[in-house]
Image 1 (cartoon, rainbow, N blue to C red):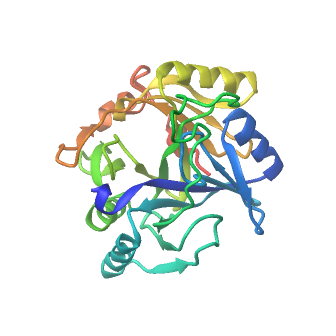
Image 2 (cartoon, rainbow, N blue to C red; image 1 turned 90 degrees about the horizontal axis):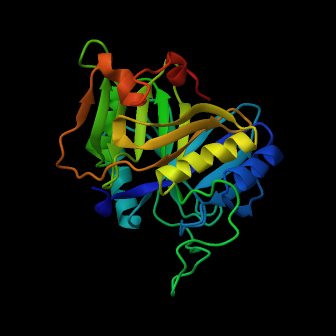
Length: 308
């Protein structure tokens, strides 16, 4: 499990259509803290309770979507071992030099069977929180917007969810917490995986196109803050996809919306604690609606089909 290999989701690198508009949105509406800009034109952010330099990277592009998603591992020895395991499993890897991303060490990059560029890294500059480490306040004053405590997870959509699940469980030492089944009762429409004690750190869903981004999720501390997040979205005329509700899967409280480029994001709270010895929860095809949106007990197919 994670403490001996993959620790947690580390960064999401997102393509946006208008960088200035996106920076305004992620700073003033979502409430992330800008931590730097690089010579490639990328802009870096962290949430206020994250200790590392960045968890979100924005890059202007002619199309929205995911550049890559990264996971932090325990140390350099873990990085080397995981790369060796990936290669032994038949996955090609490449090393991205330290410093190519601001404040980030050498990264191991590879493509998942679902068609996503994923990364592992061991080093990222520790910048701490605005409260510091000595006699800290519970939260900093002067926060803007929604102000999540961290980038929590991502839901990625593409092909071959079954092989991607095997990659994560057999090579990266994640474990399955939940799955949603298709009508054959066997095939996973979506699978939720954890490298920690969280209900999920990454999820994959079936999609006809590879390498698609369904959403990046940002953690809040309570249901009340999810409701407040929806208020802030509406006050700023943000396009809300799904109003505040509860998931059956993970039991989390949620609201989904889109950034100005059309990338879906989630503000999320709750979710149960779990451990690797727990048996995965399964949701049948007939109860997919309750699995995704427990209050409504129904899910529009467009929710899964709409990706960037």
